[in-house]
Length: 290
Length: 180
Image (tube, rainbow over all chains, first blue to last red; front, side, top):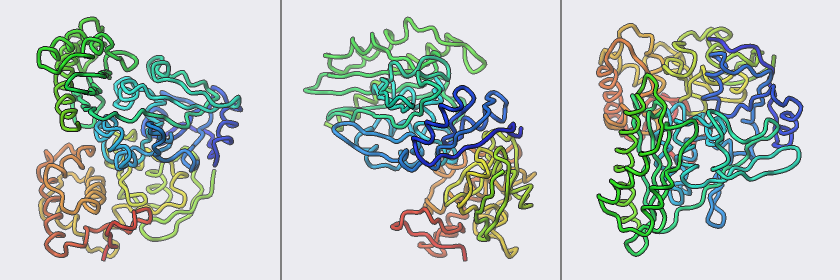
């Protein structure tokens, strides 16, 4: 369908964008890559009075490494992050997830900040951000706030960003030495949203697991960390039995949604299988990176 | 309404599209370039794929006003003198289409992909075209056509990627050449 009539603003700076957001409050949608928002407009699932297009704000694009963190500007396109050597070196989990987003033409327009602000619980980047404890930098008229990933995702397509705030940057902690990662997902077709997805990261030191991170996509209205399984893993040596037990713990208590793509029971089984596979793959790649 | 200027298939174009008008509708309705097809109008089918500043994008998921200042290549830009480009000719020779509705999007996606990956193998080509839906062919003949295009451009001149317009945003160290 054609898009509904809508006003359009194209600010050149973050301050201008923030001012426009404050003027329009609940009536405005921020337009970044548009790969989710424009379909929502076409399907009349979003009806903003005004689009605030941030594509012209140069300061919002770029990848930079500072003090053990990698900061990614909210308007950084997914293909730019995919091709970034900084991301490949310091954020292997993000690098593993990026090629699974949609298709090439989608990643050519879609942005890292846009995906994380849209907060689709089945999408790849929210699971990565949750697994890595990313930090979200938002700017409003009263200044800047930094929101941890655990507090960023509050519900289906909903974040803790206030309507007058703009997501400007997402910061990811750089992977430590000995870290191995894996992004696993099951989707009906390559490029589709995952029925279940899993971001897994294991850090090995001296042969034992010193840090374990597991975050699922598609199991709830927000990405879900498997804290019990992580606690079990830390301090242990990688083994098939350990990973089987971790997968069981990670999926015992979950209550996944059911829809035409899969029943709750199916999702639970897929989640457990992905946990086993993801942990093995992460342990293998951690061994290689030591 | 906003006045915009952009380049389409090498020619400067101006227009005053409403903000809500997609690039696809601007190309089709305002510039009469109806070779760009609209299937789903919400970014699922890939039929409306065009090349913007050297990269394949879905023109139904981009506003026309966002293309201001850009270099856009549509299917019409691949054969301005009526002579098919490398990808088009190879797809013609491989019977890569039946009804032809998805073909412009397939061709544009393939042209953009091969210009970046001239040595692409079958698996990579399948991956690159995975976002474009065809309801007739079963895809095999499309893959055959794009593979043939890759082989032909490799054997004719290893430095020459298949036809694509020059990309002003391309990194300077990447070899690219304008369509002959």
